[in-house]
Amino acid sequence: MGEGSVVSNEELAEIMLSLQTKGCHNINLVSPTHVVPYILEALEIAAARGLNLPLVYNTGGYDSIETLKLLDGIIDIYMPDMKYSDDKTAEHLSGIKDYPKVNKAAVKEMHRQVGDLQIDESGVAGRGLLVRHLVLPNGLAGTQEIVSFLAQEVSTNTYLNIMAQYHPCYQAFSLPRLARPVSEAEFAEATRLAHQPGLDRLDKHNFPQLRPTPR
Figure 1 (tube, rainbow, N blue to C red):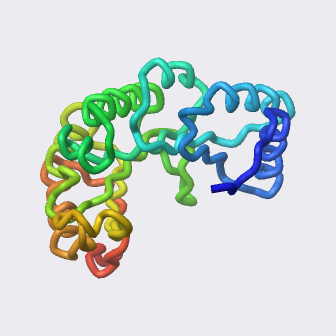
Figure 2 (cartoon, helix red, strand yellow):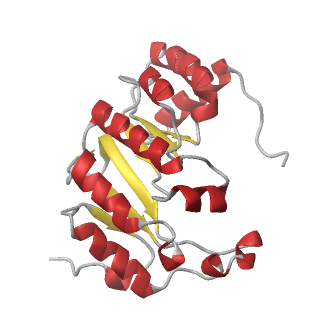
Figure 3 (tube, rainbow, N blue to C red):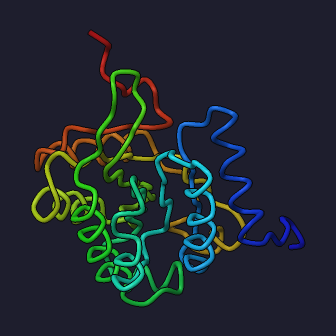
């Protein structure tokens, strides 16, 4: 859509160093999968000039193991989505094949590399895995299967961000099961499902009245 601008590897390195100078907590690489080679080249330049901030890999979770292995020892925080637990739903709603299989393998590899999320006394993350799960109306995201996978095959100490901000727009209105926002009851149910298998590190967005009372 004509937004953004083309930058060289050198310019990208300068951007990273500028963020560090401004006091940012990390370098957040958003949807970076298709430009990993250029990011690595820019990081080599920036690191040689003193870049030492944690690097965040902020992704939709449809990442190949081959790409992730290139990042082993480089990325500090992985922040993948787990969008769907059902193949047909993923293909129908997002036009993507084998999403659950690819997504689960990617999340396991990410956790192998960085482990559970580590947060310092000031509440700033320094290393580890943070999984995001957007609750969809009518159970379309498959929360039950996703939280069970995380608890059984990754770690019960997984930091899970449960999000309720789904808002229908554009073609979603032509799909009756997607044509409305998530209800508070659906969000509460997703949270309950996450607690069931022992996932207690939950960050719950959008319905603050459902947050536990601070002690």
